[in-house]
Structures are given as C-alpha cells and as structure tokens.
Length: 318
Image (cartoon, one colour):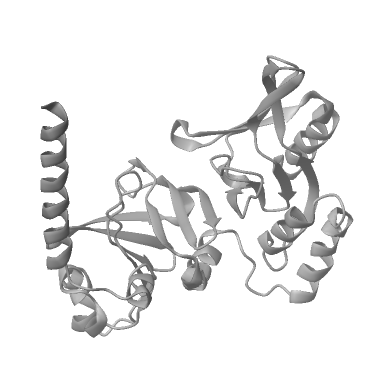
C-alpha cells in the first residue's frame, strides 16, 4: 500500500515539474552567460528606469556623466545578490541598490573606505567595499559579476586605492621583479603578487605563508587532515597592506582563484601579533568602525612578521 502511494506521489511530482519547465521561456547558454556580465552605463539614456531619478541632475546642469557600472542580480539560494549601480564621483563612490522599482543610495567618501576585497574564482567574481558611509554608518556592499567583465571595475579600484597618477610603469615593473624568487616556490602566488601592485607602488616586505593543516583522524595508519588556514601572502608597500589568499571553501586539490584585500596604511588603526593554540600566530589588523581582519601564521614566521610590523611603524610614524 505504501509503495503504491509513493509511486503515485512520485509520478504526480514528475508531471507537475515537467509541465512547469515546459512553460518557462527557453534561454540559450550564451544569453545566460551574458546575463551575468557587468555592464557600463555611459549616459542618462542608458540608465535603467529604476535609477533615473538619481541621474536627472546631470541633465539639468550639464555635468559630466559619472563613470558607472551596473552589476546583475543573482537569485541563488545561498549567494543571493541584488542589482546594483556603482558610480565614481571622484572623491566619493555612490552605490545604488535596486529595491523593486526604486533604489537605495549610499555614498562612500574615499577617506571613509577601510579596504576593498576582490574575489575571483574561475568565472565568478565579487568585489566588496568596506567602510563608513557619509552618514557615518559602517557598511560593506558586495558586487557579484562574471569575471570576463572585471576590467570594468579597474578605474573604480584605482580610484579607491591610493594610486599615484603621475607614476611611471617602469617603476612598477622593477618592483614586480621583487617577486621573481617565488617562481619555483609558488608560481601562482608570484603572479598574484605581480598583478596586485599599482604603478609607482614600492614593495617594502613580503611574507608567504603556505597552507596550514591539522590532523583530525588516523585510520589504519593513514592520517586525515583539515585545512585551518589557506595559503596566503602579505605584501607591505609604501601605501597599503595587500593580503592575498586562496578561497578555503574550494574542494579538492585544485584551487583556481584568489582573494585580494587592499588595505590603505592610513586606514589601519593598529597592527598586532598574538599567539594562538598549537604554536600558531594571529596577525590582527584593526580598522575603523571596529572592523577587524585576522590572518593565521605558523610560529616559524614570527621573525618575518615582527620585521613587517617594524617596517609598518617606520612608514606610519611621523
């Protein structure tokens, strides 16, 4: 009897599911991919209707239209994100987040942005701006988009990070050569480090911390491990502290992406080192509005970290 009821329920569900799928519009793979791209908005005419009220002043007084990028919405169960516009106004970054047929706008003065996180895993990219709004409210908007359109955010990231406009590319090239010694130790992180530098930025010190693992179970002489900290790299420059790491949520042996935290030295409230269980160390970066970033190191890196702390104090002490 129970088996017959289960079969009836299974058949009913399949029929309902098939009917629902048949009613949905057919979307090609190419269209699905393009729907995940970020898009440049170059004029008032190209602005989606929901945001036009925000941009109307540009029609009235003839101001130059700001550099603007539209990021799509994602309806996923875990990583649901809403459509957003990010606008570069020079000394301020505006973020417009869609809410139905209207939007909510937040203004982030450049001096109030604590750090920027850039995450790229295969074709999935995210950028998080963490800071304090013009109203003094801590906030961290995140923009998700297909990685093929990440170039659209380069002008905005260069605006936020402490760049030098009149710097020479040759200077950046000479600084990037400081990572060449990593070619055999960790080729991927060598390239990650090279691409992270701004033109004119000078590398002061670097620390590469390999993945930290701990044994959790031994069966028949074989020990199974878990990762307690992914491979990461610290780069202290004359302008910022750059922290690069692998995504610890990735499964399997292959790790295809990375996460970059760009932290201006002027935004660091304090930089400190403390001990942790199992001969581990924690580098703590205290930021404004009680924000904090922490990175785990092996005890063997203590001398290098102390050197980094000394160099940081030299750079930030008048």
